[in-house]
Length: 262
Image 1 (cartoon, one colour):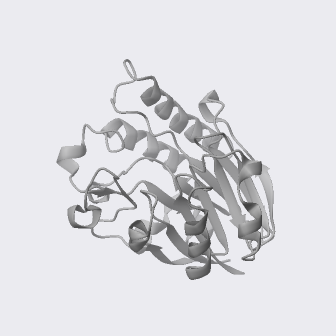
Image 2 (cartoon, helix red, strand yellow):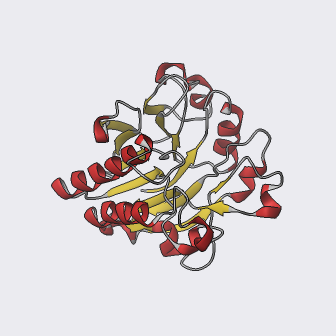
Image 3 (cartoon, helix red, strand yellow):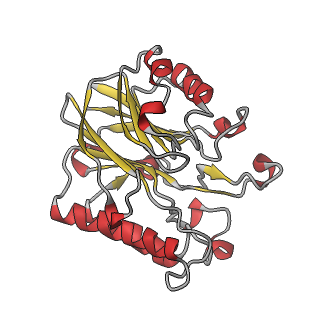
């Protein structure tokens, strides 16, 4: 059963519900995973998305921040909602499609501004969250699974606009890259996006602070789409919808997509 999956940090699903609707109409993914919904789950505008054919919706929400959701045109049932690092945050939801594929939707903590856990609690929480992800994958190796989300780490040198200038900036520091790499290795996850787009600079986030984000193009690839080796080879057509960053009242992130023939 082929299906297309998209992941998008929407930065307030209620504020940007019209953008979600536009993506659902124009890109028509079968499954859309959202992060940073900034809404209690019951207040997400389900009816607006259901009217476009997305009858199934899973999620966890919080007022004003965090929050994850999965919208699907395909039947999907919830299998877990993990609280890594014991933060009490809405940062994970997982569902299983009828073909047995499990989709994990993660929103990893951003980590604050200072890359030092001794002086920045949020940075320590981020590292602990990634460590718990690693340990969970080691304890129960995933099978027939896809992992998507805003992982808040740009791991490769060409995942940022300047490797040298961002080495001490949260999201690209060596310690964060190492922690993400350990979590990826623990689950034997394949970076599907980079498997299909192996060379060149590739970004999914551009700061609101840039007066002309497109001209400056100082982006980072913070949003990821991974799969376990048993289904990674069934993926194709990976793409990053850069133009979405130019929509009216956009999120600072853009959708990342891939199609799976499973």
